[in-house]
Length: 500
Image (cartoon, rainbow, N blue to C red; front, side, top):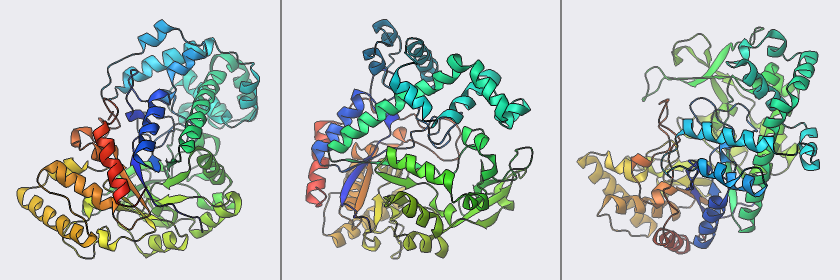
């Protein structure tokens, strides 16, 4: 059994860090943020997926599940390498406010192309990176997208079906113009990320990264290995992902992601998945698997359905998948994102693999004494959050309660804290939000994660994501680094709760 270190972590994505270039990067702001975490006694830094985003800018939808987001490349580092000049760097500066992805995409790609034009693609380190083959499918896919646009489904057939000779000829024809550019992007990202991770780990802080269960249809992942997905001969999905109707949605949620062909995956001993997990182990210290329940059973909806009412549950790979991870990759620290409606199968898989699940304190105080998120019901082998990137901020949640609901919430929270042997005045909404942070820190969970918005007492104008809304998400940014006062309060909380 892997030793799990009791500690407190902070959830803050790279994109949310403050700098002068429109979106957070792997540059000095990431190092400065890590230094602040170290001084406060924080042991875990949780981020969202680092992969290159596509339409909608969600870190959970990517052109390649193992890619790095070009937006996060530190432009200052490119200048230090002699690939950008001062005026070009100056042109990329913009006010530190919510991320404007259109502007970021336009300016960052303009500068990345300029930097690439000055880069020595014959340098030994880059040649070795190319020869590793790790990003070959990604670079080919992105080069094809540059040439033909639209979905891979509409590529000429020789490219759509990835015919060997056609791909060989295509790569040669675009080798310097496109292919090596996309490899340059991933090379720079990987260089900068590994340097940052080494620094953060040197501070005694572990990085928690996120693996989305599903991949995007229009991705190099599916294009390169279509046999691993439920597709017809024309490479169209037969069934797609979603969740069934429930209390919150009469028609369920139709996500539309392609579903895995788990029989085909098993036939190759889960080779594609093992490579994906191995890459995640290289990138992160702890892996949070999003939508964990899909490994037990997943909801399959006919691809031509208009909503999620017609779906059926199908069996996932189960425990043998996680046994294979341990067999092939050794001990791997994994967090199971087990939120939502659970059944005995999901719970059995999680506990059978000895994986920690998640608790959300915002949902603990509904008046039910058996609520599993109540601090008194929380078990040690779990991770407790006030909320995640998909939830209201603590202050935002409190603000939307009616007067009666707010009074009941405070009463239940006060009673729970008394059982925990702690006290916090519940006068203002910020008081109540901080009390939730304190209650989480004093819980029995070996790991507690607080979103940076809750540490700063921010409301829902600072929310990261509202599920099922296509626009306006993933834009939250810190205007500046957290204040000394904020970090001093966090440091005291960590010390007082025994998480130092």
